[in-house]
Length: 176
Image (cartoon, rainbow, N blue to C red; front, side, top):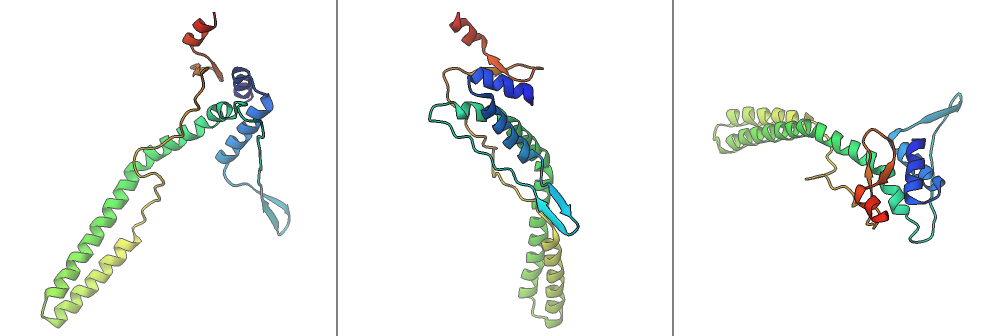
């Protein structure tokens, strides 16, 4: 992480503490909940409050984007990985609800009271089974929308296999 902080700070020509602060914020979101036991019976959840206060046009967005991009990439991969389980649960729940509704429709149409009660009891059981099917939450309904990249006249490209960023070949040619 230190290499990325140094590379981003150098590339954006910003103070390294800005990139480090944003790195801490990004890491804190990935760590999950942490509880500290002060003594027996006293447990506190840890909190990290960070602020980057700089004047306008000080490239805060240019630092924020590369420090948070790995989180968005991991989130997109996890959503894609969980998509089949989500679809399977939705279809199973809809099928169970449709079956319960079709049994209820039969119960409404029958004139025989005993058969109607039997069908209603069956529909109740099927509805309970449908309600027991857990559909995992889905936060994005459609293609994943990542935040837009900051607009800058001087953009870098990711160097494969090396932490940090460097100017693109076009930018290097323009600098010469």
